[in-house]
Length: 108
Image 1 (cartoon, rainbow, N blue to C red):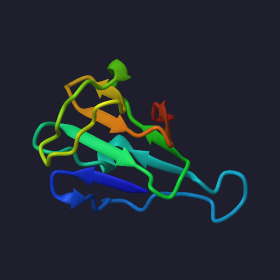
Image 2 (cartoon, rainbow, N blue to C red; image 1 turned 30 degrees about the vertical axis):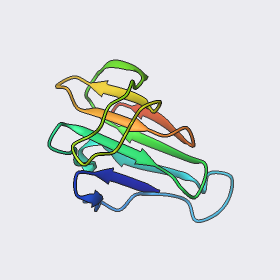
Image 3 (cartoon, rainbow, N blue to C red; image 1 turned 180 degrees about the vertical axis):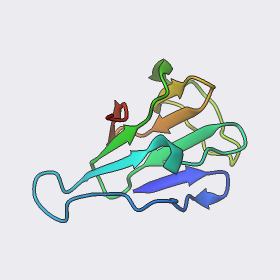
Image 4 (tube, rainbow, N blue to C red; image 1 turned 30 degrees about the horizontal axis):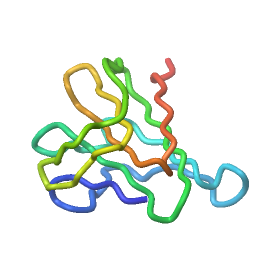
């Protein structure tokens, strides 16, 4: 998995959790707070190794979702055709077709 922001590959602040083997080996769970947006409040997730399921846990509501039109992020990544979620407050998460995203609320 590669997470791209305005400074290249994003260093995660918390270790993602994923099973080492089995049918869920490609599932990763992260808090939305673990992902740092670029200067424009954008995050791009791609997986050059193939299919990936990313579980994002947050208390923020999704205000918009869809397919991006022609647009360049702060670091110049063209997100045209990528799916996206926009969260309340304006942060936008773009993801490529081989990445499946599930948004869940914090349990508690």
